[in-house]
Image 1: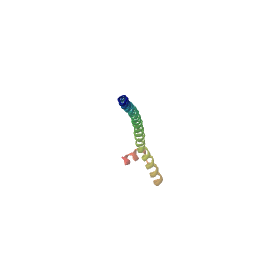
Image 2: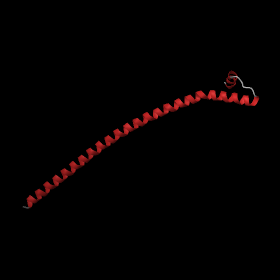
Image 3: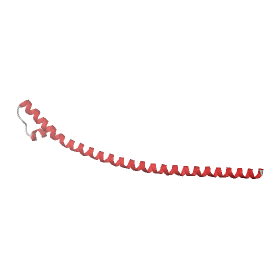
Image 4: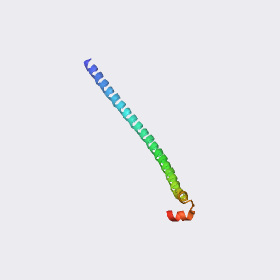
Length: 101
């Protein structure tokens, strides 16, 4: 009877060890699956953020280009207005552009 008890105990310990190993394997597989899913979602979010950032940079470049294009016009208008305020005579656009360039 003692031998049967020892065999039963060994069998129980093997079953317990097998169950622990299986549980560990399931946990590791689940962890890897979750890690892969998180990585895929992070990669997608990073790609979306990069796309939005590039669109914003494009808009900024467009606004900057338009602003730079208007600088000459603003400078010309300001110079004409300043000369007119100081002298009472409004210079021609060509004369102001000649001086500014």
